[in-house]
Amino acid sequence: MTQNEKTLLDAGERQLVRGYRLRFEEVMAEQTTEAVERITGRKVLGYQSQIIFEPTVGIEMFILDGEPSESDHESRGVLTCAEPRCRSSRSPPPVPFAR
Image (cartoon, rainbow, N blue to C red; front, side, top):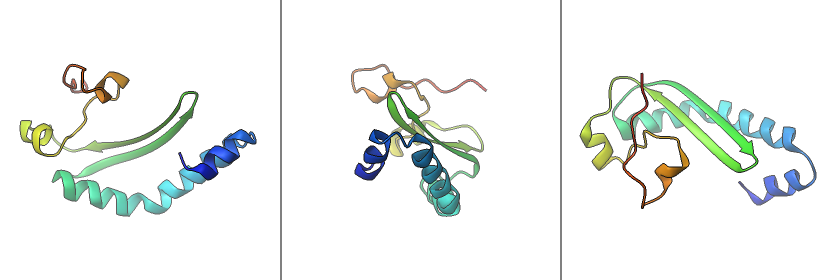
């Protein structure tokens, strides 16, 4: 979260921060999607961005075609688990989402 967003949140402007982030997502969707496709070598089927204020968490979620390969996990660092435990180096390896 940027300092400007923190300042707005302190002033009670949650909807303004959320609206800004949603609009930014719309403006950047094509560029962001192209970057993810280039990095992963897979087509992006869907993209969603979300912000949660308590606790403050930003989420960028890309739905990709096909199944991830082992090389995706090793060489590209693909995160297939959105749970907080996946962020810790002491956690067990990420678990793929069920289809």
